[in-house]
Length: 111
Image (tube, rainbow, N blue to C red):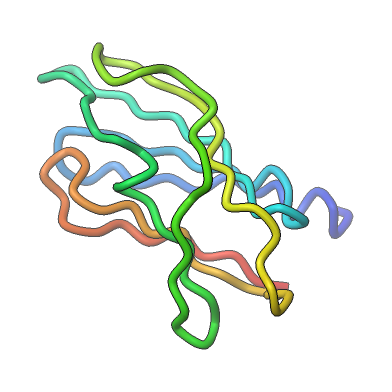
């Protein structure tokens, strides 16, 4: 297992009515592949509002864009891009709030 492969580790949360699967795609611009899946209701969350990147020192960053499916339906996927974070962070927590009746889901990556 190389360090590049370890960075691409996939994490998931199956709480509430929505499964959220997240993969760290690129640590240079902190981008994450996100898959949302449900069998009840519509997936209407604005992912640029629902997600935040929290640094090791507690600073919170909002994504600069969501490249993916628009709100609606039972399955959505896309990439959340946060951009380059200064100072350079070696670890971070992707937080997804208010999706599928779950207040907060945390996905953590570190070196």
